[in-house]
Length: 118
Image (cartoon, rainbow, N blue to C red; front, side, top):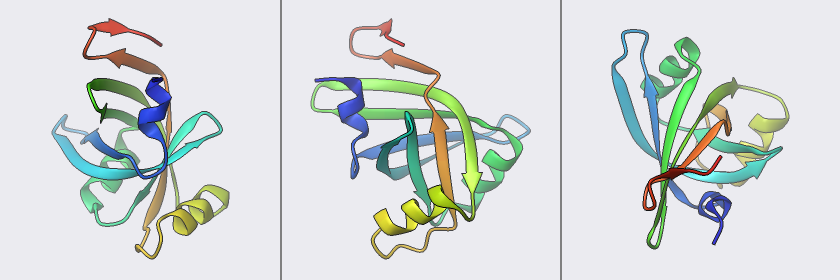
């Protein structure tokens, strides 16, 4: 199974952001899939994460699928309107999406086999 399969729509992800003061913040989110080779997430309830991503564009995602574990790092973009926001609203099935988060996939690390794969 590919690491990208762990990011399919509906997969649970641990999304980690960091404040300007380097205070980490982690939440559970649902992947809305990979679009344009980036991970799309609808941020619904996390004002802290939104503020952190406004101040610090770096994200870390931990994902698990059966016995596979991956850490993904990348830079983010936030959207409150436009194509990605509209897709996030449509795919979030009734949840109140405040912002659409797009995470560029800069690095993928296989935590089970302890090796960088991208």
